[in-house]
Image 1: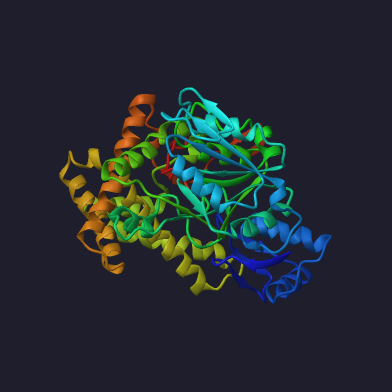
Image 2: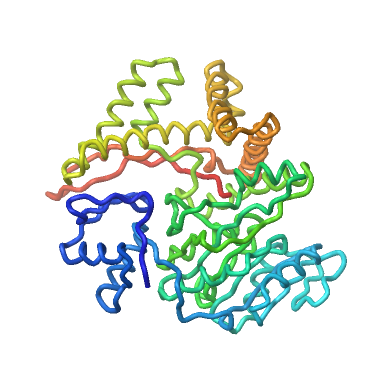
Length: 464
């Protein structure tokens, strides 16, 4: 086992203090532990015993990541499950790209023309969750690889995934899902920049509110024992079943990792109608997920100081916005300064967090609140301001008018799905922000000092 430090982690106090992780945290190491970490980052392998325990704790905290080399697993330990509906050509592409996997299960979920060679066939479609469940329940291997019929893995993708299962607490590993190149498709060109399934080029521990909060089941390798533990995919969910599964695995005390060194390509929808419908359907998953997972779903999760600052700016109160922005940017350096984090590093982190909160709120306006914003002059002004990051992104990427049009249609279609899901399930949770950092109210009860948090606002988030 070898280690690399997470890209966002910084070391202080001679390497004994780590600041970062996902979500960010402050970790103090003893002198011997810091020396071990120095050696690992210099290329030394992790020794068994206590050093390995320390390395795994760092990996599970998200401050370090294991390097995928070797391992005890092989393709003989995997069953490939391919759920499919009306895409036999896609199944052939998946099978041709995975010749090393001997055990394959094709689940035909009610195709109009039956898929040749299907191991399991549904007379009518029961949805992707039911199709995946039907597939993995026939497996006898410990690992199950799910690949959708519109994906195509690169030849060496499993070599980057399998070593991560050497940690017995890792229940699932997801590769990076990149958009397949298609110069003739404007949707493929757009998704090469902003793919809905592409979670980036950096490894991560998957957890709610982390840098990677979910992974798609379009390409996912899972322990069969973990699927048995949580009961597999929830078949009542037509969309968002992958988010639900991942969070239930985490709730069971297991870990899910995102491994971008493994790459699977994904084909985008061929027409604008199909592409927009997919975005709309993604949005409809927010409401049922919010009902199952409550405060993990939010359209905007920000510190209350930043929320007040940006709200004041939107309301035309720049002096209030500046004052609260100053407070927001100084609290974190004060707290971190008590732990001897350099003032300049702490201040930079605070400023990034405050600006990030503004970006989150702007996205919430475009993707959740815009119908309400239209009814008021201030709301319309805020809505226009929320479009500026899209314009800046378009210019920085050197894209044209079609790209920014697709960018806005992406948000609009997803938002329409969120609202439709809220109306269907009679809940507003996905449209409510989550305000963090609120002061706690203290009271004396029977001679014991206790704390009681103020009532928390419920929350909901983009799932894909």
